[in-house]
Figure 1: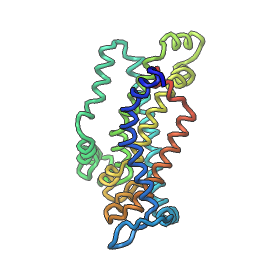
Figure 2: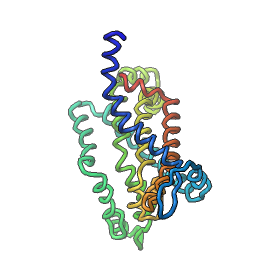
Figure 3: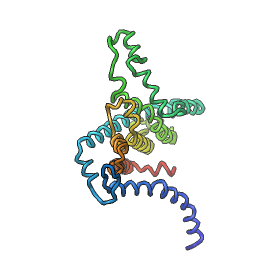
Figure 4: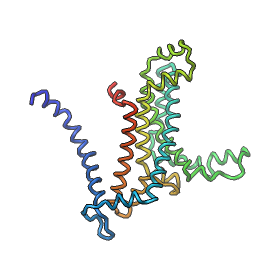
Length: 286
């Protein structure tokens, strides 16, 4: 082994060690435990079984929870993309002053200076029965009775998710858009393209890596969350992670581990599909 090769191994050794300790080993333990058996009043029994996976895949509750998770993920993904794309577009192409653009971008990050819990709970006085929206609608005569579906519903869950995770879509798209040569847009306009044509044929293709990274962030965050669903739906909705949490509460670790493995497989498949559509590595190496 040459000195150069040895130096390369030494350079990657810390990262490899960190990945092994905090990613590979925990995931491996979860996979191993998922094949153990659970016995009431005894706990984990270290005998190989597929019962956990069979129970999960044959349970209508599991399918309902996963469908609910996918539903929330798709809705939040679309909304965060629409909001994030146009905010980034405005900051990059309509704000000519760089200082103002950076200031507005930092303004978007102000809500993130507080915890997720505070930001999520802040929607209660807005969406509640006696909240700002219901009071405004009643006082203007639009409705006679408060809207019950604003809070403790799927609607409030989606609102909280969009509020919490839109920034994760804005940042990578903003980063990709900022690298677009403005002369390309002017050339497209000179060639006869209208504003929508420029966005569709120039801006979108050139910032697809940012969109892919943002989508990856949003998908993994929504699919891995259970607190927002539990709090904002008032326990009326659930997610795949809610099932994991319920199993952990009754100390059924093997079933919770099997559920976690299934969720991880789904997230990895989605991530693989995104990587298949877009070469995200181009964004990372630029």
